[in-house]
Image (cartoon, rainbow, N blue to C red; front, side, top):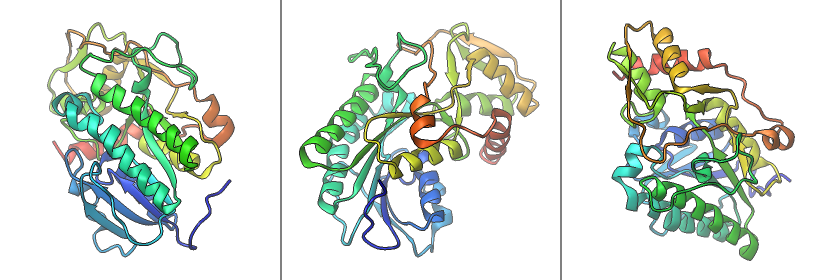
Amino acid sequence: MAAKLKSKTPTSVVTGAAGFLGSHLTDLLLSRGHKVIGIDNFVTGSVDNIAHLGGNPNFKFIQQDVTEFIFLEGPVDFVWHFASPASPIDYLELPIQTLKVGSLGTHKALGLAKEKNARFLIASTSEIYGDPLIHPQPEEYWGNVNTIGPRGCYDEAKRFAEAMTMAYHREHKVETRIVRIFNTYGPRMRINDGRVVPAFVSQAIKNKSVTVFGKGTQTRSFCYVSDLIEGIYRLMMSDYDMPVNIGNPTEMTMLQFAEQIITATGSKSKIIFKPLPQDDPKQRKPDITKAKKILKWSPVVPLYKGLTDTIAYFRTKV
């Protein structure tokens, strides 16, 4: 069921609009005829990610913390809640802000959607599965999460956000969508955000040792940002209101990935090993059966192509 639009030009509100994913989502929405109201407080977002939108009459930006009341005049058709620290470095430094944006921020964003009779999408995460005991992870899996560990602030914030979203759906009849995002990479990632792609690429570009944790046998699967945003857009426009995994099911070990980055950058870097961080998931791979069936979506950008564009971006930042 397509959303009931209040005008021919839909209005979308994007929280976290200056972030890595939020800024790419904003670009896609503008390219598809939406007016976009972006909200961000720049805790982890960057004005550089939206600078190219300056002067665009269809883009309005509000610098605000989404844990505070969101007041907007005029109609809103879609609310996309992407505000949150999303890398281990960020949420280990900002555990309380991470919990607040997942709880209070989600509450305020849902309140806006309810007031405006808008459709709401929460950017949830594969982290809600914790260190999974089932592989690959289907949406029906409830997860294996350490609530009091160092990553608990992020995992539980997102789990709470999903619960709050379903509560608004059931009690207030808000149209809601839940996307569980798996590892994503691409231009506009912060080079020092602690995630594996910027870490490996920046080390390789500088010909420094590439740091692999543990023995490098833990696996991840990497989805290019344009594929991810397309999948999320399709989910919002669909009539499916239960969680959907969006990610790339092509799995590889961290050691394989490090070698691929060194090759792709033409680097002289060597690989070194460091101890595995606490609660670091051993395997991470999405089951995307639902996305394929319901959204007719699957990733199309091959790793070598995505890495080429990402490495080119990071060369401008190193």
